[in-house]
Every structure is written in C-alpha cells, then in structure tokens.
Image 1 (cartoon, rainbow over the protein chains, first blue to last red):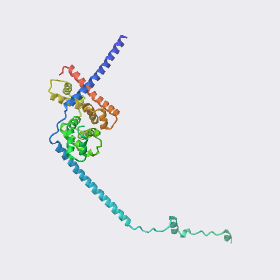
Image 2: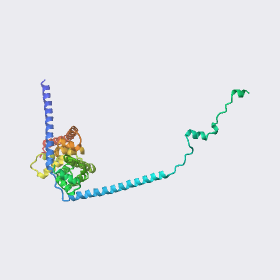
Image 3: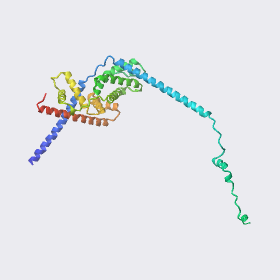
Image 4: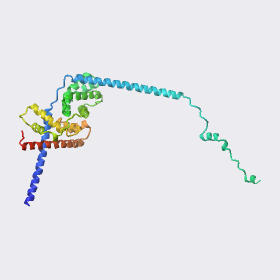
Length: 128
Length: 199
C-alpha cells in the first residue's frame, strides 16, 4: 500500500515536472521571440533605395508596354484575318444543288427504271 | 495609419511625389518586417522594393483606407514568401543538429549580461532563426507576424483572408513544432550544466 502511494506520488511529481517544463519552455520561447524583435530593429534604407525602386517601376512599365503593344498587334492581325476570311467565304459561289427536291425524290430519279410499277398479271388472264 | 487617405488617392491618380511620400512613410517598417521574415539582410531592400513595386501597380484597386495597411502587409508577406521559395537559401539547420556551442549561445541569449550587446543580438538572431527553420515557410511567416511583429489575430485575418479559428489552429501547430526544438535546447543546456561545461 505504501509502495503504491509512493509510486503514485512519484508519477505525480513526474507529471508536475513535465508541466513545469512545458511552462518553462513556453516562457523561454516567448522571451526568445521578444529578444528577437529587439535584436532585429527596423533597418535604415540605403540612399539608393528610392532611385532603385523607381528604376524597377520604369523597367516594369516599359516591359508591360511592349507586351501590350504586341498583344494589340496580335489582336488587330487576328481581327483582320477573320474579316478577310469572312469576305472570302461570302464571295465564294456555291455550286447549284445536283437536284431539286427532297432526298427521296432524288433517289427515285436515279433509280427510275428499277422502280417502274410492277405488272401484275391477273389470275384470270393467266388462266387464258 | 501613417499617411492620410487623400495622399493615397493622389498616388492612385499617378502623382509620383505622393507615392514617394507613401513609400517614405512605410519603408522602414516594411524593411524591418522583411528582415525578420527572411533573415537575409543583404536581400531585404530588394524584397522591399518588390513590395512597393507591387503596391504601385495595384494601388488603383484600393477603395477604402482601412484596408490599406493589411493590404500592404499582405504584399509584404507574399513578396517575402516568393523570395524564400525562389531562393531556397534559408539555412535548414534544426535545433537538434546544433552544436553545443550554439546551444550555449541560445542559453546565453536569454540573459547573459557579460557578453556585449551586439554579440548577444547576433546570438538571439541565430537561435530564433534556427528554431523557425524547423517549420514550413508559411508557418514561419505566420509565427513571425504573430509573435515577433505582434499582429493581432484580427489583423492576421485581414491579411490571410481566413477565419480566426483556422489561424489559431495553424499557429498552435507551428508553435508546438518550434517548442519541440526549444525542449532540445533546454535538455542540452541541462546536460552541459551537469557535465561541468557550464557558462
């Protein structure tokens, strides 16, 4: 009984120790973050900061202008080509249809000979 | 807000001098945030110029003054993230890989008065940057904005356009990952102290 109590107590101490360590680590981490903030003050910008920034802005603007010009040229060319193709297709004379009327009528015209009405002989005529 | 909305409106209309004033008002703050986010002093100005470049070309979309600062932060976060993703030069060291000397430095960072201030700052920077290297770039930026820059959850919500609960979950997970490495620091510190290799 005493042994169990001692075991319980020692595990309590272990749990308590682990919790204490957790709290200590949390506090250490918070201290480190705070110290890091103080150890890294906001740096002073160099003298060339603004001129370099404007040079980059102008370079980006120039490249975007070239790109937009290229895009506009491409769009204009595509528009011109489609108009041209439209005109060409409109002026193209379609050949007259091979035959007027429906498909069945055309088919009948092609096979006129084989579609002649059957000459059914009457039985009476056959008997004679 | 560091500038009047009228000044922003003038900049929107293409007034270069107004835009210069806006940049002048915010550049130190932006430079500071970027330096803490990317941890590369030599590239901080380049990234800051990219932020203001993006601002210049998207300023005409701004409608209300309240969203200007979160928007500027968003541009800063995106530019920093793009930089980190492109360069991939971030040191990948983890706290468990740090030497005993670095562990002692980490410990000393907490409060050794004997060291010079600059040396101490250097050690703090190294320690925190090593700790933050254990999480993804997105989480590193989020943690830095919350814990180092001191932005509130509301402000982060405006920057990230996600709800507060998802932000809390992401922050908690990222912090837990960093804490695992802090445990490594304290364990090593205890080992060093018990072996008589103390400071």
